[in-house]
Image 1 (cartoon, one colour):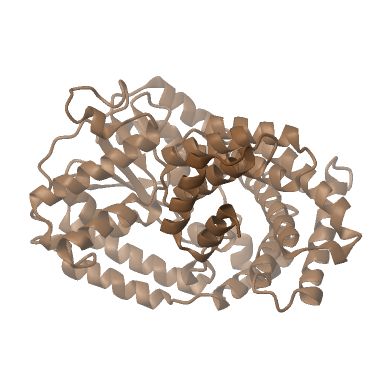
Image 2: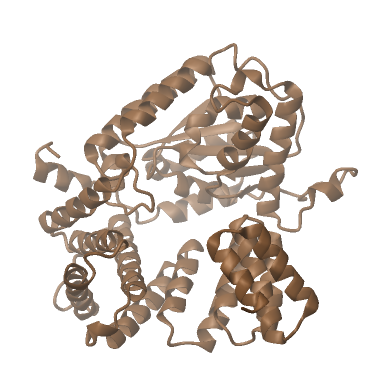
Length: 520
């Protein structure tokens, strides 16, 4: 077995240290251009797994030089650019890859996901349509060629396309399809294809471990298609099938999470929150949190129009970095660790967290290089957004790290949130994402915990009405900018007007509420 094959085996087996050592030796020895390129690609994959974006970009750039014309290192390089917030570079790489291999449905799908990330929904729809057509021509007339990977890709394309159409319909109330519509033939075609793929799953792939997840995505795709056609009863049938299938795969219960929330309330009292970081920082974090699908993304986009605001998106640095380090320091898990952290330790944790945010916003930021100078990481940015909804569980920790942080809780009408979640295909199988009853329990636990924070930390959390962010955006944003201690800026108001233009109130949940008569 060659050294390269051995390193790749280490990677597959999860023996990452041995894999890294062998790949590194190959890059130094450079026995051949191809082997060196694959070694750099292996190092890049390891860096991606370790969430070391800068290292991944460096290794995968070298891999692309040695493996000119190969697609995999280009796709991985795009992932690395996204990890360091260089989305335009990722788009450039994927556009180039699609020019090299225009017949690749996999690349079309990845390019579409990149464009969705960057808000280019129409371009994304065009690429998804091409990918669906390519997969149809290649596989549907020869089902014996259908691998589980191709089936999964097809399901992903259909789901993404249907989601984009549903979002457009819900936001703008586009007229339902008619037989005269220019897209009617294609919509009818993909609906037929989705049914055919479900039948194929039951016929040929029943025993495959991935088939349940594929069927879930196909049911969501059909439900979205029927929703857009205002065939709500048929849509509900498929939403139910998708959610029930996901619920069967859940390994935890909402009651377990409720018990965890009760633990937070017990250990995050006034005494535990009395000690905070006393360090002064040049950047103020803004935490946008709450239940999913409440309007946090729209608020983030509006605030980012302000020249002093940038965003790290939905980042998990609090859970992945801060709480992990807190456990190492105190030998206690959150929330028990709250009362054991000293001011010095809180200063260290806060600085580490902020440096991660800064590096995401500005990949060239080097905390070590700036540690002995007065240089700022960015000449204009004074506030960085962390938009992870589940951070509402960590408001006490946020307060201890950053007593002057800006915490915004986005609220929305309870039924609208519940149904928006029920209609969305989440990657993880959490019980409250795929059962209306379980989500109601989750809502109750969330409301209870937020009431605890309001009582324990009065004035720390700004409650924002997600519905009024559309109907009375200017007034809401003016009050919010004051809370964030940001000067009013005309570009924020202009951007909010553009964001809200043509958006109808989403009352689609009422159709489903009537269908089930309150029973689910």
